[in-house]
Image 1 (cartoon, one colour):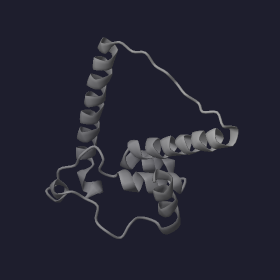
Image 2: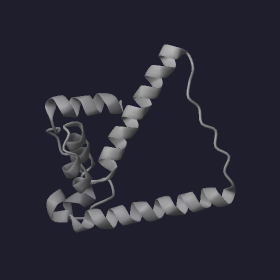
Image 3: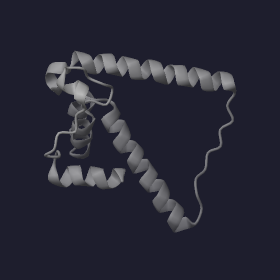
Image 4: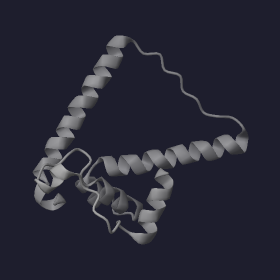
Length: 118
């Protein structure tokens, strides 16, 4: 679905409907604000604009491309790339805390861009 959405953005541009939540109208930005525009700028090759709107946009498009490549190679070769990670509960807690901190920092960053994102 991500590849289809990225292709649609590349072909037809940004959607004509408003995708914002109710808090957006009050000027409260969340970590995902600007993500659609960032994905659009990524698939059209405007990487600096994409990163400026939301750093998750380019990362999401790259992730979708990597998953599509993995699926294509898996179906073609009948072999799948599998990565098994064994992590301790301490590492898991640290990664979760780091993820929450990163989401909070991105939310603060997006709030500073409120005039651009409205």
